[in-house]
Length: 218
Image (tube, rainbow, N blue to C red):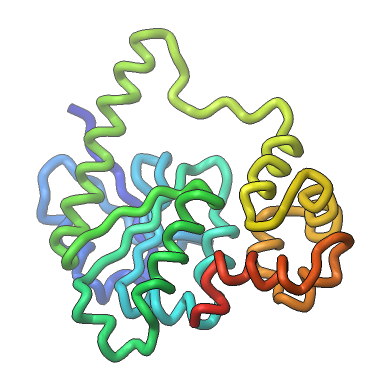
């Protein structure tokens, strides 16, 4: 079995996860500077790790969606949330806000969300990702199939289809949003005022969009 190679951003040293991973057999750990994400597994998966307290803070200040939109191509992305519900008691954020943010991350950014209770479980999940993905790639390669996704032949159409999933947005409004903002990420990070200035998007629709992406819940 090949070693699992995990590149870890140096800012994660205090988490204790590096020490846990280094104690496991068959794992090569490199402490590096990562432009985005906290962990890179086998040069395939890029993992952003957040404790529940970090997650709450990043939702309140709008940092979460900005960070995820900056994830580097061609890596696959994962958001890993660490901690228990009790950590949120002093955060000042509602459960609905957390759920709304995770729906946005999963459905609109297409980024899977994993949960762990503590750093040890986070380390175990990272190892599991590396091992299972190595097996999957082996099966795909033996079958003569590539393991990387095939880019959409019409990314504009794909983006328009996703924009039409927003509340109150049809085909014409989706085109207007794409023309004004240029990407789904920019739409999700915009303010109600900016959205309302888009052709065909009134304030009610703008508020509905922002409500969906959590900002108005906080």
